[in-house]
Image 1: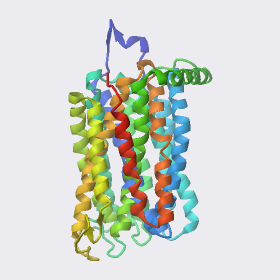
Image 2: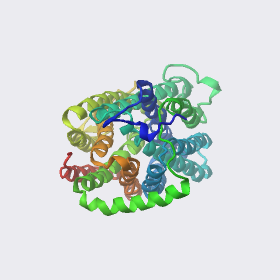
Image 3: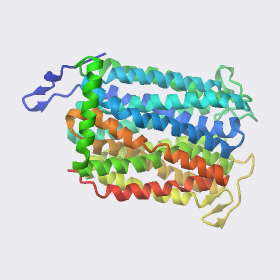
Image 4: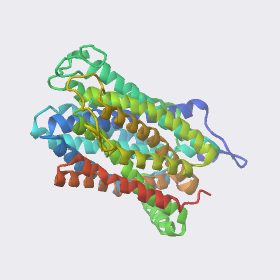
Length: 462
């Protein structure tokens, strides 16, 4: 693993930043990790779980929500502590490697999810929760490397480029799955008209299940350049001493937080709107599966379109971040998300904004129904706004947080992104279970964006 001496980072008063290859290698972490969120939690495996493993889509949405909530609680409790320890120890890569391994193992276990087997549900959801913990913790420490890679005026572009690159990785992984691995059980053909590679059986949904091992292998391959070429700080102190120092620093930071009003307001806003965004992405595919009866081919194609929109949104958002500031980018993104979600709730398979339309014809052309096309347009708006929201949020944190405790504050950032992250899935799961309505469960997310927007208005970027 490449390291740099902390005292060699300064030349007079000017930071010396690593070469371009190091920055590009860091960007590829987003490429490496994105298929987990694209394939597993959003567009392929989660909808497959809800429609083919769980007894019915509403129950599947509820169970998936409870598992996501459990993972969110673990992440909320441990992320600031681990971030503080990483700041005290000086290293980032060992943490990324450890939690990356958990991601790989948990994701690979998705293969066991055979259709119609209720006994597989508990271990499958456990594997999903573990993989989610690994993915989120690895991301915390990867984010903490950003200030050492480029000057402050280029942080927004770096963050936006990372998100955009991640979306491209998600697109390519979806194309691989839909075009060559996952087939329609009725026709036995993939989206591109091929029989599945490796003899994958459409009847037992092996093309959906292979997304787990594929995600793990993808992460191993594409995270390797970051370990080889992106510099890391050398160890400052032993782990036990770093634990004591890290916990002490965390206690001090929490004590100082009430005095840092803008930072505190931002972390609280992030806590709320991130919960809404993560829940929206996590349940968007499940909601579409239940509303329109979409399966892997339709949902995966929808995912490709969202990822393309997200790529351009993140790229443009990075430029606007440097030009207008991250706060304005976040607020604009939230307005788009809020209005698009409210509009989606007024779209059903046979109506758009209370106007009756012809429902989709079973076995008809892809997205032939008017309501389906409206859902696609609104979904692309959500995809285009989601990338800039997340990229600009980590940029704003870098502007507000003390530079010598950046991993710790990214831990707090993850804490505020996860401390209530179980609430969104839990509310969706509970309301869906009580009402037996996916629409009622999703409606609660509008409140998250309204509250987050109100709190963000109190933040001063400087």
